[in-house]
Length: 481
Image 1: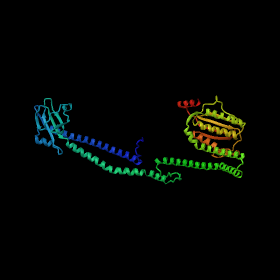
Image 2: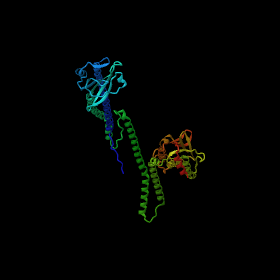
Image 3: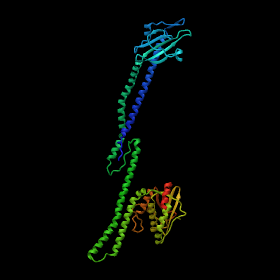
Image 4: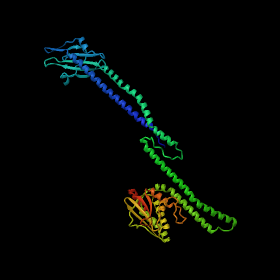
């Protein structure tokens, strides 16, 4: 069952969407905050005006012998609380229930500390199916005077009308600005992404065989690292392709000689067979044919090993002890060393330090076998293999006391298909190249030195020391048993 995958989003949408979302959220937040502040300011202003009307009515009150009366009649009171936006309702009544002026049918508010001191008391009241905003003043100049309540109320429709007008005045410019900002966002992002489209077009113009680097002029700083890394990748790819082409050409050249020899020997056998069908095959020709075929088969094996060295190291990835691998390889070469009348010395199993590395023990064993083989073939009578741990690195050295090599030979001996002037035709010139590729795939290095205090030639393998986890320890124990 295949899982559903969202379609890939374009960079243009990924830039425009958060910008528009941020702008819309900011516009809504600013509009809402402005509307709330405007409504609050409107209510404050209307409450102040309402309180002023109540104080104007209260200014008409008089007390005679403690009895309250109002100097304002109905007409005068109407003029004092007149409002062009909404009709005002008012009531001036004693606390005992005697109405002095006004017709507002409302119960007196409960006495509160603020009202007892003559401060205005604001509240909402519902009458006739509508909600009114009211202010109440309780007045009693002296202890013996009759307390009087002055209540003025007005509909909240006027406040809501003013609030809507303010909100519209805030929202409309913001909406109009949106018609300008959105196209600016679009054009700005389109212009900002123009270099990416130009770089993409330049990459598309490169042909299949065009691995030239991309120009870095006029590239924005945000894309310069990407272009530079791409150029470095292209250069590495070009170097790898060139190396593969040289490898194929050298391999074809190396295979040409044994194949030509095989065809020549087979042609001789066919001519002899046609001349005398009953004559048996020439033993000398068969020996030469076997030798040439063996050289060709060995060359093919080394070509395959050279091509698979990095992949094999990646497949077989484990922590292992180099001392164990070295002991196993050394045990296989004691016999050939004796047959060649040479002395092969290896580090003792008890004195060898624990040298843990990560990689392929099989391939490292092949590398050591190749180096020991070369030392026995082309070196002096003594070959010594050493193992040491130095500052977080594993050092494996293969030394022989043969003739000192020239600097040009030391530089070229790791090149594929290069062979020294030793006059032995059985080599293919791939052994050291394979060894170097295997060691590099394990994160190490391979170097050769000769002369300058070294008797003969010394090849050093340096590998990074690894730390064994519990799982690695279990795997090494299972392999040893």
